[in-house]
Length: 269
Ligand SMILES: Cc1cc2nc3c(=O)[nH]c(=O)nc-3n(C[C@H](O)[C@H](O)[C@H](O)COP(=O)(O)OP(=O)(O)OC[C@H]3O[C@@H](n4cnc5c(N)ncnc54)[C@H](O)[C@@H]3O)c2cc1C
Image: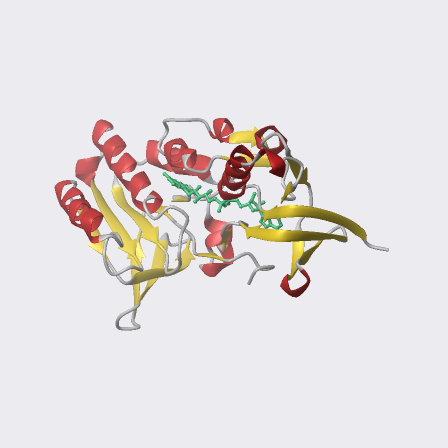
């Protein structure tokens, strides 16, 4: 027979969202102690916003890592397992290890999944030969390596044609790179390009207006409606699709910081 567990509130995902919700609920109501479970298969939690500073050379990636269990609020149970199926009509869900967990209320907070296969050639190219990304614990060191060793040329920073975690992160690393290139006297031998699938620099007009001034002041070229679709590491070329005309455009790079496309985790999709 399948194992069973029952809680008033079940939270799927112990990321920033899941842990915050659990903490607020137990703080708001003592009667919920022991009645809340968070389900997550990972044993480590990563404070992802720090990765911008790791890529910019201002922090070590190890500082972003904590044992997940140490962050779970007192009175909340952590179930170390992955959810594989939702059964909303029965108020239950199924885990990979075969437990049926039932609930009165469900909070789904499984985050976004990075789609490294969403750009041809990215998975093999990232971390090597000028291609880098802040979007994973495993690749973030390569960003600082590339920025630190940049000797001038073309540095491209991308923003994909999908929702992303932190709409500002694709640009923040670009501004940190610009700052370092100036300090290391290579900025005057460099072209910097922000190539984004979006039609403006930022969704919220108030911030877009300010950021347009920032890129002008820093002499960063912007290319909108450009979606990175392929990396050719041998020739150091990035292939973009123009989302307005459908035409393809090749840009040569010396440094390419990729914000990869992201999507819903498969079990939710
Ligand atoms: C480089 C970078 C810079 C950023 N900078 C900022 C910033 O400056 N400011 C800001 O506000 N935000 C920033 N963010 C975004 C911020 O980190 C995310 O928005 C936040 O982590 C999202 O929290 P979450 O809980 O939704 O997802 P996550 O923190 O990704 O957690 C999701 C959890 O769900 C779990 N999970 C997945 N599948 C299952 C499953 N099947 N069953 C159970 N659990 C599952 C995962 O293991 C994970 O622990 C940045 C992100 C990055 C990558």
